[in-house]
Amino acid sequence: ILTMKDIVREGHPVLQQETEKVTLPLSIEDQDTLICMMNYLKNSQDPILSKKYNLRPGVGLSANQIGLNKRMFVAYLTDEKEQLHEYTLINPKIISHSVSMIYLPEGEGCLSVDRNVEGYVPRYERVKIKAYDVNGKEIVLKVKGYPSIVLQHEIDHLDGKMFYDHINKENPFQLPADVDIKS
Ligand SMILES: O=C(O)C[C@@H](Cc1ccccc1)[C@H](O)SCc1ccccc1
Ligand code: NI
Image (cartoon, rainbow, N blue to C red):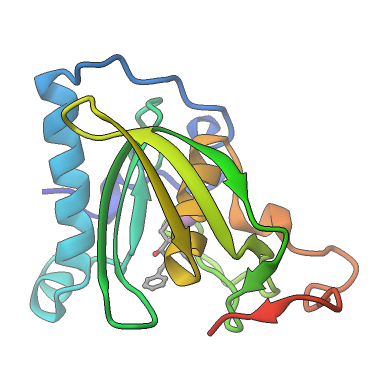
């Protein structure tokens, strides 16, 4: 199973580069990798297993976070309305987004960053994503709020970006007038 030793930490080049598009249909190997990545998220959110395997909880994981230069990620989270969101997205692309922005009041963390980085991370409130599912079928999904933040955090990884790249250097808690804090 995937554990913290498999997770690449900041500074490693694979996290700083734009990941390569995945060839479709998915190889058996890529299919298996995605299952392992989703199992990491589920295990990390299980009180018993996360303790047993010493896993940091995660709601998203990108392939380059486990050292693979492949444009694919998984996400497993419940939203503000306790709705479960489970995504395995291949070659995702944000094709449109809202003007309005949102932030997590507590800021963001990252499984690849072993330190606290303070500050608001401005994200689009709503995004429309085009991607492929594990069967190679094209999907278009619209997400808003917390799920939108998670998917943007993961797509950033695939583009070689870290959450703190979005934090205002002068004033990390700067809030442009018209933004809403999403809790
Ligand atoms: O490093 C990753 O990509 C996984 C992040 C994703 C993430 C962080 C902040 C905001 C949105 C997504 C981990 O989930 S950070 C740990 C965590 C665990 C549970 C809930 C929120 C954050
Ligand atoms: Ni991250």
